[in-house]
Structure formats: C-alpha cells, structure tokens
Image 1 (spheres, rainbow, N blue to C red):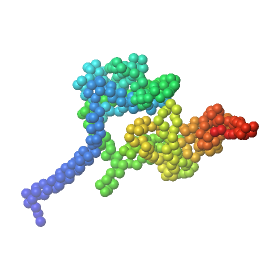
Image 2 (image 1 turned 90 degrees about the vertical axis):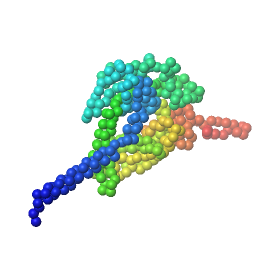
Image 3 (image 1 turned 90 degrees about the horizontal axis):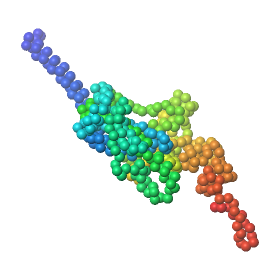
Amino acid sequence: MRLSLSGRYISYFLILTIILGSFLIASSDKEKTTINAFNHDAYELYRSQQVNNLDELIINFDYQQLTFVPIAPPDPEYVLSQSAGLLLFTTKDFPASFITGLVPSESDNITVYPITIAEDPTTREKKVYNVYGNEIAVVAPRPDYSKDWIALDINSNLYTSGYTSDYIEDYIQYLDPARLVVTYDLILKNDLIKYLLKQANETSSDTTDSGGGGIIMMAYNGPAVTNLKFTCMEKLTNGIRLTLAYPFNLPTYPTNCYTNKIEFFTCTNLLDIWCASKAITNVSSSTNWIEWVDTEAVGTNNPIRFYFAGNADLDTDGDGLKDARERYMYHSSSTNSDTDYDGLDDYEECINRHTDPTNSDTNLPTAIISFPANTLRWVLMP
C-alpha cells in the first residue's frame, strides 16, 4: 500500500510529534529534578541570616565569637581562625568605603567577596579586611564593652563562686573574644541562587535511583586513619551524633586493625578537663568507623560539651585503671601504677578511697589514737 503525499506528511508529522514530545518530557523531568533538588530550606536559612549593614555584620561576628571561642585550644597565645562560610548581604546600607574595598572572587560564574573580621586585643575595635588584607572597615567597641563578656555568658557566677583570682584571670584569658578570627564569603542574592542550583546539580549527579522511586546516597566509608579520630559531628533533634574513625584494613583483618572497645568521654571545661565516661562500645569488624549519639546534649542544660575518646581495654601499668580513664578522669599516670609514690596504687586511691592519685598528701596515712584509755590502737584513716 502506497501513501499519498499528504499521507506521508501526516506520518512525518506524527513521528516528529513523538520525538518532540519525548524531548519535552525528558526536559520536563530534568527540570523537575533540578527544582526538586534545589534546597529551599538552605535558601531560607541564608535569607534569615542576611546582613544589611555593618552593624548586622558585627552582630554576626559576635555570634561566631560566642560559638567558637569556648572551643578554641586552651592557650591564650593561640588565635583560632574559623570560616563562617557563605553570608548573604545587600550593598545598599554599607559604607561606600566598605563596598569599594571588597574584592570579588569568581568561580563557575558565582561571585563571592571574601572578608576577614578580627577584634583588636588592645583597642577592642572590630576590624574588617578584604582578601588582600586591606582594612575596609573599623567598628569601635560599645562604651560598656568588657573582654569578659563570653566568660560571664558561660559562667554568670564567675566572680561570686569562690574561684581564686588566678583562676578567674586564666578563665578570662582563655575566653578572650580576640582569640578568634573569622572569615566569610559574602554573596549577593542572585549568586546565592546560582550557588544552590549548582549544589543541586552536583547532588543529583552523586545520587543513584534505587528503582523504587527513592534516592540512594553514595555510601561513606570513612578516611583511613592511624589512630582514633573524630571525623564528623552533627546536631540531631535527639542529641549530638559523633562519627569516630579507627585503623582498619579489611584484607588483613584483624592484623593492623583496631579491635578494642572505645570509650567516649565528655567535659564542659577545657581549663581542667575533668571528664565523665558516657559510653563504651565495640567497634565494627567490617568498617573503620562507628557512630555514637550523645542524647544528653539536648536543650540548654548543657550549652558546651567537649568530646574525647579512648581505648577502653588498654591498661599499660596494670593498676586496674584503663589508660583513657587515667588521662581524662583521674589525671594519673598510665605508665606508673602509683603516680604520687605514696604507697597506695592509683586504683586504690581513685576507686576505693576517692583521694587524689597525683598528690601524696591526700591519702590520709595511718594515725595513732588512744581508745579506750591506756590502750593504743592503729586506725587507718579514712
């Protein structure tokens, strides 16, 4: 059967329609995927933190100080450099000298303006620098400003709790706001949208369709390590989830692999590091990492928590106290069973007598008392 000329055109039209329809459907699916992958929550979060003027930028810096100064290493000479990432801003109400001093940095058609903010430890001025280190803004301290504001925010009873003057001075030094330098990447609204769309595309390319309509994220196996190492810390609704990596090599397991239990510790003060044991867990024989959720770190009762982990089986000096506990809980020696050489081993002092294993004067040695009259008895104190 031969088609007429008009019939051929109709056939060609139908084929073209099918091809075009398939293309449009594919394009539509791709567009839907991009739209669905766009992180609207992240966009709203950036919008909520947007800074519109210099004062708001400094308020954000104050927040970074309150967040990161308490977790800086306890060394008053150490200055922690911390990145605060992207920060959405508008140019309208910033000083002209600030705007003209910004230096753009562009990648994949996305422009950011790197800046650094630091507090002068002498004048207490907040100084803003561009990527070249040029000062582009200076904000004077408030008339009532005091460098102990972070210390008092953490411990409002600092001056009334009976601490020695030396302790208070050290505490304030460790929590000096000037010990933090913060870097930002300022970004405008249009470039933020480009950035989130780029993230969405990268995320979609790193995922695999499970076949049932769901998405399977690429598995995380953890980096190779030579010792215990925290690799991730995440805030959940029911606490803080920590990921801990340990030495592991599947082809040689258990050789060259960490197989002991792990003990997690927490404390709230890096000045003394007196920790509490929170969990002891086995490690996995098939991966090099485990996760533990600190469910006590919920709400405002524990605003600051520092985490440590150690080998829960190792007892180098054989005194009955694991090395990790001697280091984080008792401050005793893990290589000497009698840290203070007072004749009582560390286990006896820490567990049975509850005395200080590092101070030979705290073991309350044997004393002689008279009871009843004219009869001497030896009494061990306490």
